[in-house]
View 1 (cartoon, rainbow, N blue to C red):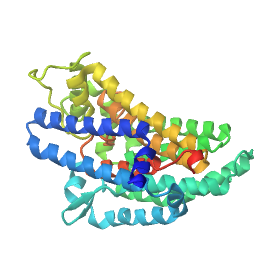
View 2 (spheres, rainbow, N blue to C red):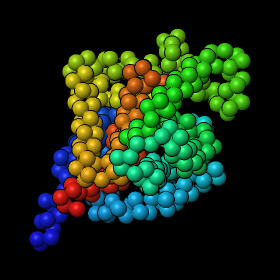
View 3 (cartoon, rainbow, N blue to C red):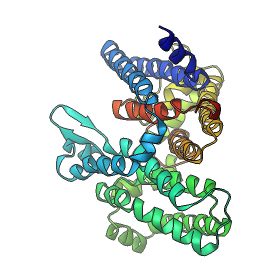
View 4 (cartoon, rainbow, N blue to C red):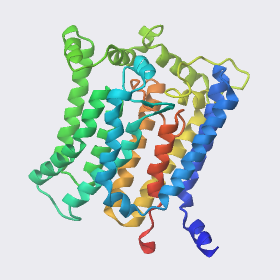
Length: 384
């Protein structure tokens, strides 16, 4: 009895609060999306509740495992998580492949899931382990040493990016790059290298825009295995209303639905604007349409309060590995929030990246539970 009471007292309630609030919002959002699209409400809400309960079980279950064990076996966990991604070359979901042109979903009997969601966690763990192995605390490194460190990290990341390329999943690849950049910054890589990398990315993005809108550039992109729908997403992003009835239909409808909510949201009996894939890629339109600008701000505040509690939890451990993991996982979630909402309001191109917690899909929600459970199990220095 006393042991159970101590375990309850040790729970990081400040971190658990935004997690629980986002789970409640996710059930409400899926309910509203089902109502707006005329889908069976009861089955969708029950399904979301099951995923939410499963997420909580994984959250608390993983929090009971000491963080040092996750780090100790990080390479093994990373390697094992790559196996399902390899299987995608043979057991991908043919329906989703026809719809999206990507091999993201592993199809084994009645089960369909995205292996890349799990790799996001093991990838960060492996990068953190290699970082703390190669770099000592409070040591100033030369430019050459920084480059050697980055080369070793990129070598570790190579299998992931190779598999992402084979899956044609360029959107998720950016998530991994975002996490790497965050860890490079906090690990103290020289600013000149980081600035060069940033300029390189900006140059590559500019070249991509040039290639998309020129015939010779399109031939280069096709040679690099880019698909027509990926080029269409860029065209739709640059001038959505010029393609509002064709390739930009989803994004234009999303922008209209988002703006229709006004400050306080529409009434329940108001005429809704149809948005394709409202329950997943465009789930933020449900929040904006029903809750308006204020409701959207509340959701964004909840996300950033979660990120704040995650970083504070890492800092309180006074351990580099814990802090590095928190930063890496925060930036994975942050990029997904930024990209998904940015695409919904038209400031970024569509990539199919889900909005954490809110988008429909059990794989994402359950793996987020694992990633956050690892942080929830971290203890302040005085309790170690």
